[in-house]
Amino acid sequence: MNLLIVSATFQEIEPTFDFLKIERQSNKNFYKVDFIGNEISILIAGIGSYSTVYNLTKLLIDNKFDLIINIGIAGSFDENLRIGDIVIVKTETIGDLGINDNGTFKTVFDVNFLKPDSFPFQENKLINNFDLYDNKLTKVKTVNALTVNTVSGETNQIEYLKNKFDVQVESMEGAGVFYVCLQENIKFIELRAISNYVKPRNKEKWETMLAISNLNNKLKFFIFELLK
Image (cartoon, helix red, strand yellow):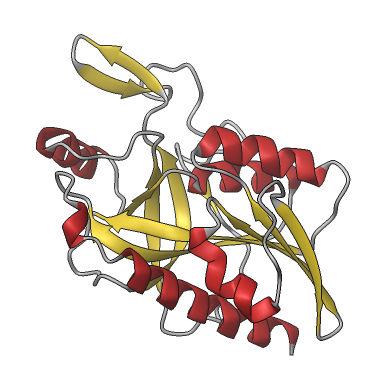
């Protein structure tokens, strides 16, 4: 299998670098390693959906992958999810693509700039219909996610997003990976670890290192399950 792992930052995937015995280079964002007869590649795609779409698309021009796994930390709107929990993202919604109409945010679908089912969207969402993980990642909750390029940190905005979109978690890159993979018909999975709740910003309450540790442990388990 030719597997690609996409992470926004090195920090979020550093334990897997150690596990695969990859030495990081400061001027490099793409790595390949042979692992039990399979090729595992890692792309550090950068923060935000624009960097993600650009770097992933550029890589796909000259490389083919059987599966892409997008990993990263995420904030949770849902307090039933615990800090450190691992989730699989089933749908992605773009939360900041639209217009501000006299103080009210309207998506491109609300104002009919795009039809709700304009490919690769389905009912305004990007949906992962590849049934890959049922027997591989048992006991991992499936969630709906929101992608924004500005992390939510103000009470009224947070309440608005929770009420407008049926989502449990928020990140800055997920929809970018969904969009590229759906356009190119490449199988993919998005794994996220909850590092914080989406509330007015207070990083003292974030558990970034716990989330990263749990995320990479689950990723290593999944790699073994996929490749054995």
